[in-house]
Length: 143
Figure (tube, rainbow, N blue to C red):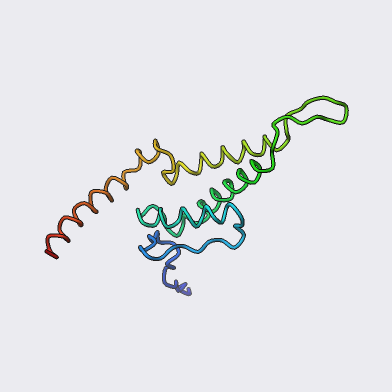
């Protein structure tokens, strides 16, 4: 009976933190408002240690929902539109905008982008304690 030789475990299976100073790559398909949101959020999440390489797709989905929300907000000038027959109806883009907003809220909770979800994230508290200790000891050592 032949033995099946297994190769080394891939590094992709490990959860690796993004090291400070190194940001994950932005997906190429993010454009406009979504791209700007990515570029503003990633450094903040990286600095507090809340983003890992495996989180890139989820963060991209958040940024895409934000981009859709902003695009539709700019598009919708009036919440009601008049039909050809003269009836007033809700703008069709409002349902899409509201759906994008709901997706933003759901995904944003995962990254601590709301006050309540930030409170629930223990890693922020630990990071703050570590940075206080580091600041104290580093300043003592340098003095």
